[in-house]
Image (cartoon, rainbow, N blue to C red):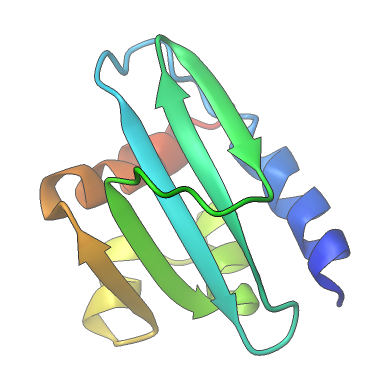
Length: 109
């Protein structure tokens, strides 16, 4: 799978999230290692969700994992906390905001 194919799939999954209850600003950067290597970010700002294929310098949290791990998280097949605990995903930054990734994923329609 190429980065472009992966990003198109993952963006579709994230864009299904309901961010209407999230009042704070969240900015996540996802670093994909291995197959489909690349970077994208997810931001919740003023009640709107943005998913873009760029690096985000003013991020709250940076996640690093394989594309397969991120896809399992987005599909609700792998809990993000479990992925971190099992060392399938590295997390750098604000851990309180990192924990809100699960809420974001769980809000998907």
